[in-house]
Image (cartoon, rainbow, N blue to C red; front, side, top):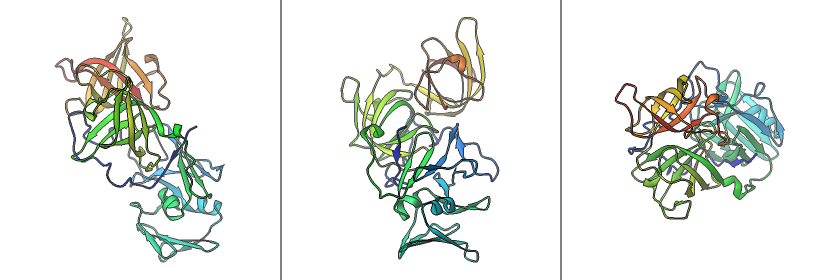
Length: 352
């Protein structure tokens, strides 16, 4: 399984989009994790986080990981640090934890974005948290404070290695294929989402990003549309946000753009009804992916509708769709004037 290199909790701050264009979602995360209780969430859309320290894996039941308020994966520090050979000292009065190994000395306090390594004080944009009696730190603590190699796999495996930080990525680790599931445009920067949330990636687009067609004709950001199949070469630097954030070096559009702008809705299948003529009627409610899209939509599928999974981009039969599936549905502007409107699905991308 290919892996991604994780570098920090943010990526130079330049990839955050501020405004919206007609094909841009109103919110940066169209399909949101369910909010409930104080119990840490350790999965999303079937993506289960598993901790691996120097090649030794830990059960997600015994050592649960979760996404914190800063959108970074949170790691139980005692489990990880002791496995790496550190001695830990807890000071109850200060709610602080110290780590020592050989000549190294580190410390931090619960709820404070201030991490000390020797005489150096760092901030990570995320604070240590107490959950179910355990102290958690953001994943970037291991990379930025402890100076270890941190790798996040696309299936949710989080690997922390005590060896020196290296550049073990191969070129194949920086190539992604899939469908555009969101488009953003700011005053100075732009961003697209590829393959949804749980198995996806956010790609910052700059003036240096090369965008071409399959036959190598030059394209622009304005030529990108929701639902398009693309291949992306991206930077090795990837922030461990959810989804991970990196910068696009080259984008190859694998299909011809439709004559009219594609609309999109990210949400949950609320109803699904097969018909006698071979089509299937699907009711989806969620968030619109552009200003002219809809939060609720009724779509009919035909034998020309492409249905793919976000995990591996493999085709899914329409018969496999079910109520409750999280999907990104794409359709043309030709819709009925009913509420919700009815149209034909051109592509459906399923969070699997």
